[in-house]
Length: 516
Ligand code: KIV
Ligand code: ZN
Figure 1 (cartoon, rainbow, N blue to C red):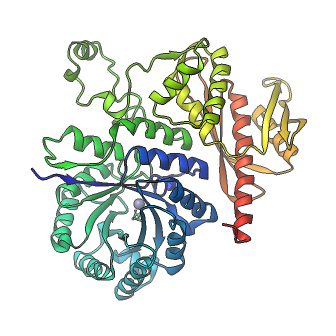
Figure 2: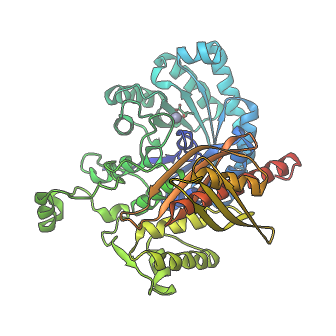
Figure 3: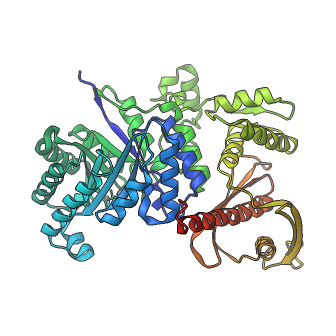
């Protein structure tokens, strides 16, 4: 029985961020990258360096912070992109450039308007240029799922010659069926042999991304590209947790295959990505959905109590789900119990983060009788992804939500001064956001607003995620707010978006001066 290690290439921070509404700020990306490292993913695709100064900086910061996983940047097959990618990952301990060009007839003719020969020439030049930054170069044939086999072999041969070490075969539009992917990967891996690693990158347009990735593994792929919670362009990518847990749970079938993933970190990664993006997996989502290990019917509950395996094919604890996820701490719990609990949830906080989180826990415990693990996860995530608070919400009062004119009075701290102002709006939320705009003198346009209850119960914490375009400058920035009161959470989210906007303006200014 040979041991075939399947490399897990996580693209939550790149393809996952392409999910509508999933953009993340730099701090958030760094936290997710650190969690991916704890999960032991082999490669973290940290972004697309040429896309914007913010993307570049986030990749560079991740390259600095991550020790063990390889840090990768995507680049189109153009020298400007490759240079940006190479510069962004420069400080990484292990670094990869992932360059791509489309190879299907439809993409070459209509999108690239390039002849096949020209596409091969560009691919070869790009791989050769990427090699000047790092030895580890991945080449992707975009829309390989609809490309001709003869052409794929020709271009793969050429890029291997130029130095590509991983060859990715994306089913970009999620068109292929598992059997077809299997046949395709078998033919390509027989052709490539040991000259490079074959990878797959499957989209989920027909709900087959995970099945297709598994079929590819069975037929010679040794790397799979995937995302936490299956985030990604359109219907998303193959879900990391589903691929990894299938290989583990059905080791009898996938005999000899394994990954380096530390599965106990899966749940934390999933919750962190959901908290940060505001996109929660559906309750019946495999592995990480809220109901994935819940037994509703009496017959099932009875069976599980008698013997867990009657209705459970995986152990919840293998993904980090602790069944003692009930009431954990209360207002009498001390700092020690709190910090033990935080560590058991997999967080590793600095002294300052721990102090702030403990303070917030105490405030919450005064208002909410039962504090659950999910409450703590929400507080900690909110704490560690916080950008510098140039503006800080100190106080909020709202009036006349139903019959009168909705109004809000806010106090905000700015440069050691407390500024108080009040305003009216079409609704309470509108009044709050307009008042923040007036205080800061910076106009914001709200483009997205999401609110979720962190746990069940009337006294649940509300988690608000907003997207705001300030001063007409796109893209929208994201802000988070967490509070037992939805209006306070909303005000916090809006102020946090404002702070994120100011931080990104500083970054852009520094880049323009050549500081970054
Ligand atoms: O779906 C796709 O083809 C991609 C490539 C850039 C790998 O995301
Ligand atoms: Zn993709």
